[in-house]
Length: 379
Image 1 (spheres, helix red, strand yellow):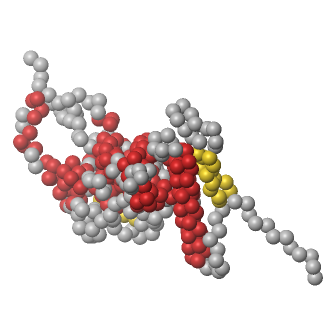
Image 2 (spheres, helix red, strand yellow):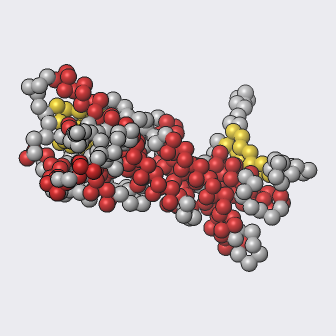
Image 3 (cartoon, helix red, strand yellow):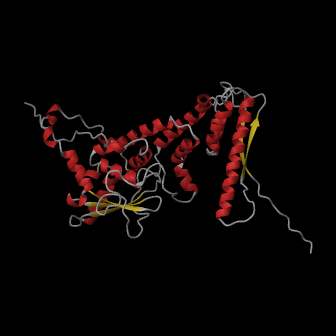
């Protein structure tokens, strides 16, 4: 008679990494005594909330991209479900020997979208999926970045689905700009020569535990700096998830003229006042792509040309204002406000904007040549 015993290796957690996806489903007999483990989830969550009372064996010390630091007291058996943390734990336990507990895991988090709130939520989800009730549209972007960094693919997919729903509804300039900053945060950090300030997509405090309580997992101050410690995770950005969101965002932007009625006689004036700020705050590559996209529905090439000129004029105003503000912050005098680029709109007569043809309207950018002054030789 074949044995019906089950060792539990086939249990597939809803937030486990995809490495567990190929495991076989447990047989029905595995659930015969499930009632004996009904309180296991709450017991594990108690271990998260009270780590010092539940035989915690590792301490995760993190440095966030904004320069803040945090510490989490954890249980290696549970958090090793993250491939990244499993790697750190393996190295730490091997080097420290069995007598040294708890082991310390230093980890630098280069992605500015990873917040203390999101890291707390993701780590707690390794103890119990019950905490995922806190995964919503407001926390999804930071959770996506955190889950991707820790290589928790299934959790990342859940967060991505929520992000996609929000992107599909983005309409205002602030909503679109926030998602542009999210998907382009890695490039922005590189341009600034380091990690920018923390993301505004998620709060700093955790809903799971009292914020800042000593001895409780959360964002706690650390003596000294741990920046630069530890191994890197899956990357400073969300990788393919960013690409997916960027594509969805562009799809959303090019549909806005039709949705807002930006070129309908009775709604054009008000709708364009709403649409122009959306485009004016985009990176140049995105605004060029949107205006020249055939899906960006404009009645005629001349209408597209005139609308593009309005967008470029609005972008120039924003650039001048930003340059003036920067000069004031640096203590410079004078009117200032000079920008180092120039954007123009060109209408190519004879070109076809129809299917199969290129766009007759092109948005161009070129670097502004520095003004040279000739020194006078007169005495």
